[in-house]
Image (cartoon, rainbow, N blue to C red; front, side, top):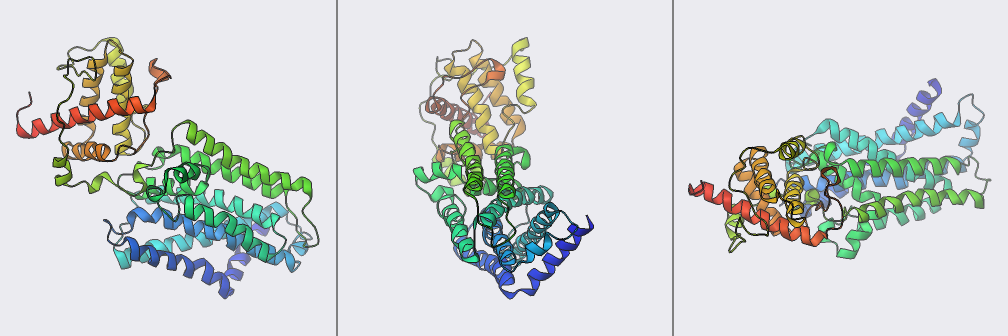
Length: 440
């Protein structure tokens, strides 16, 4: 531990003595902040919805260029060969290097938060403690990748080439530099294989007012933790501490392990429908205006007594099955997961699935869902969320099965989404009638 702390402190001091490291570590993130500010300063609140992207770019730069450049440069000068003679484990030295880089990156992120607050009046992250946890998880994922780059590169020039091969695709089509909503459909699916997308999602969940915190970002958190662990294992197995040692062909197979983690995460995301745009990716239900609310006219909807999307007029006394369902939904599973928009979408999906399955309780389940939504979300906020979903039909993730409720599989996502839209219109119409006082 003494050796780890001594090397940790030495690494920090050497970094701040190197002008090039300070420029890349702090002036470049500041440049990105000012560039984003010049483009997105008109957004409300200013720059808040872009901070997740900025944080990710900063961490990615430190991981793809900062740490591997320092490691390879020290290896070329024979420093790591001398470290190997110390009575300190090499693992401790690697860990201290990664910890020092995490501290340097964290300082750059804090600088961005402070500068954005001073120059653009950007609000502080809504969940500061959870944002710090998210920062550590993202650093773990990206610094693991940086360790692979350091062990795969023979020279500092090779680090720059390999780093760009990761950095540029992540920024351009990985949902980091260019927002996902601005990318074509194929790129949004490709972005599911890049960890940068999940880093932005995690930060959005902890920084934005509509974010649900880390509890609403369990999949991206798990994806980043898995990618970081696979990369760290691969980098460790590829380790070489002398510039005279060439990477063995057998060691190159470990690069495949690191990339396999990206592949597995992407396939799971596609299989579970997580390639849909996350609600917090930029557009927000909070920006819905009264004019937009009035622009949605429900028109002619199926009657509440029809076969399609029926809604019971009164719940009455609940059967044991409906009481169990009510308790299940009120306790947050599966409908309580995600931000306010996703939670609304989850509950409407429950009603839609019961309707499509022609369940005997479909009408009362819909009434139960409407009641829960009105209990959990303020009246005006619920109107804005419903209008947001109707104006952005591809937002969020649609539930297509409820195995814990005995309703599993076989439903098409588009069919469920159509029923969700009808239920959203019916609930919006009901809320408007309540505003006019003509709803009993």
